[in-house]
Image (cartoon, rainbow over all chains, first blue to last red; front, side, top):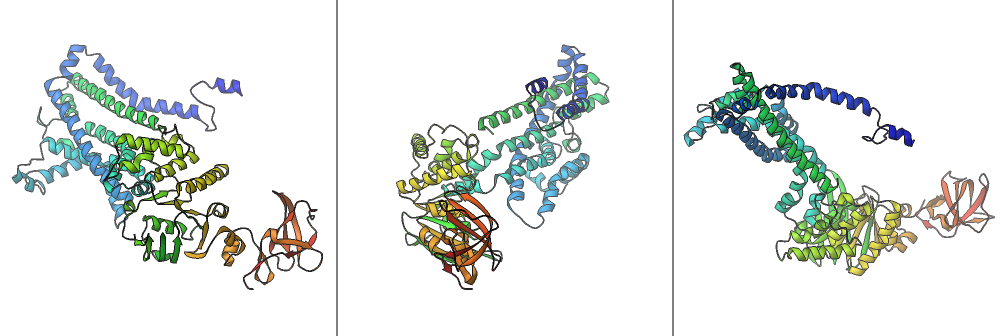
Amino acid sequence: MTSLSLSRGRWRQPSVLPGFGLTFGVSVIWLSLIVLIPLATIFLRSAGMGWSDFVAAGFSDRALAAYRLSFGTAAAAGLVNVVFGLLIAWVLVRYSFPGKRVIGALVDLPFALPTAVAGIALTTIYAPSGWIGQFLDPLGVKVAFTPLGITIALIFIGLPFVVRSVEPVLADMGLEVEEAAATLGAGRAQTFFRIILPSILPALITGFAMAFARGVGEYGSVIFISGNMPGKTEIAPLLIVTQLEQYAYDGATAIATVMLVVSFAILLLLNGYQTLRRRRMGA
Amino acid sequence: MIRVNNLTKRFDDVSVLRDISLSVEPGEFIALLGPSGSGKTTLLRIIAGLEFQDEGEVLVDGRDVSGLSVRDRQVGFVFQHYALFRHMTVAQNVGFGLSVRKRNRPPKREIEARAQELLRLVQLDGLGKRYPSQLSGGQRQRVALARALAIEPKLLLLDEPFGALDAKVRKDLRRWLRDLHRQMGLTSIFVTHDQEEALELADRVVVMDHGVIEQIGTPEEIYMEPATPFVSHFVGETNHLPDGLHVRPHDLRIVEEGGEAVLVDNVFRKGGVWRVEGVLSGTGEIVEIDLDAGSPAPQPGATIRVQPLRSKSFGG
């Protein structure tokens, strides 16, 4: 018995769950083919550039402005989605009303819709002559062809991530905890901020991270509404495509590398925080 | 102190409570006993203010509290599945009720001291810094109790407080809760479907079925003088003899002549007695008989004759 379990190596405990070797092996190969190898070629390519070329292409003023815009609007859209995504998830979990299933399906629509369609639709509506734009224009609020427009497109794209990650946690929490808080004298606001919010915070962060990551990389819906003015409303993914169209492969690769590293660092940070929290709570 | 008058509650079209009246004296320990679906938990939740009645009133010290929300009733409530706040330490859980006070909220240090004191009371001192997930079921339930006691409730309500615990822990907690109730001079109402628990803990037992109170009485009255066939059946073990006679297993004796003929199926030792399982020759009803372990046990397959020492008649 002992020799058997020793021979299995120290990574895994003896278990009745079969097939660890097979599933783990397939997982690694799959991840390599789909994620790791394509990404690695980006690094290889930029590694071949030389440091000064890399900095010149990856950290030009135009590129820096594009990063600021991409990460800034993605973060803003993520935060807006955290608030309204939570609200929608709350309504879907806590109340039953006619058409609930339809609303549930509507939430997922941004997943399914071709992003270019969403972009064109949003541009049409928010342009100064559009349905909503015509009311905003006299107020001096310009949406289309501004960072605000980009943010709105990213809010649209990111919404389902927050709703779908918070929903199950909210449903799982149950009413008993809230009832307990009420019997102890807590008001509605106290119950929300001290009981509900901390309990769903990990799910909210996960939802934010996914919406943010998606927003940083989003291309199709943004290019129509952004106006694409270099240094002003040009997002980083578009800059990459522009570079490619000009056969500036090195420049495109350098920008891609910077985005990759920053995105990965941010996701790692958020994940690390979650792990820390979970370990602290001993769950 | 607490009076419930003619309480009625419906969920959609189903009546879960029908014309319930009950009064609880200060310092009493009351058990609401019944099978699932009897309405006992709904009654408890209405008294707490977590649910609202359709008709009738709940009076606390003569004052109608029906319009008062649960936060203003200052009632301690212990949930079956503890309902602890998972993201808070044990001490934070216990101190929560004090920390959300709008008026005369004690300073932070005082809340912490009070939480420590309560944890000592429930014999969990030293565990204040742990999280609920790091505790056993019995420990969690004691945290829930300490948390409920922190707001110094006049009335303590417990919904199946030991339902999710294993037998040994249950027994220990039961005795401990009884002592705590006395020591703190609480008035307590607890819900249970376990008749043994109700009989052991409560000063008075309220037996419920299908939204109706079947009987209110001391454990002795409930066991010895069941008011309805349901109570006789639900509380303790009961044999049905012909002519509507209900007889406890320990109230049957073997006789030479007369009585009822019973075909013995199985005999085993149950604590200090022989438990004889058999079938009534007349009606085919299953009969359980407890015989003094000092006497010889009948053999399976034999036919014996039994007569009730005492019985309760509910008509044919």
